Length: 149
Ligand SMILES: [Zn+2]
Ligand SMILES: [Zn+2]
Image 1 (tube, rainbow, N blue to C red):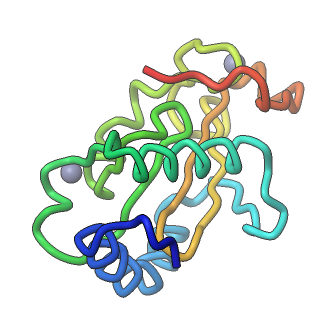
Image 2: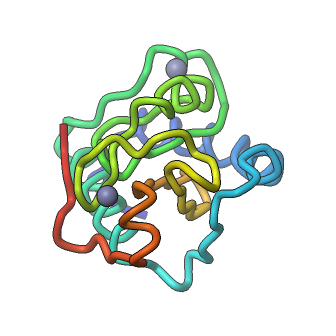
């Protein structure tokens, strides 16, 4: 445990952890085409997003949507905005306007012909990254073009 975390932060993490496991399976089924990546493979975009989130949490910069104050529920972290926690509905609402993490262009619908999503299901947070069709077709890596709004 990180001794620098406040009691409130730890309590929030515990709430999220309790809800996260059950939600993970349903989330996967509903996302359909999203590519699941095991945490142990730790792609660079996931490591960057996680490190940025942890730094934001430690320094009090982390924000979250208003719905996450209401009790245990899944948390979604979008790679392009790693200092903000989304509840699942808010993350879904934002899908249509998400941008490719590599080139920054609109990723399009998250369909086989539109944007492509990769998901890492952590123990607490679901991490999501999207690429546009062109970058996906080239299997473009996204380690150094990390974008923050
Ligand atoms: Zn929300
Ligand atoms: Zn792109």
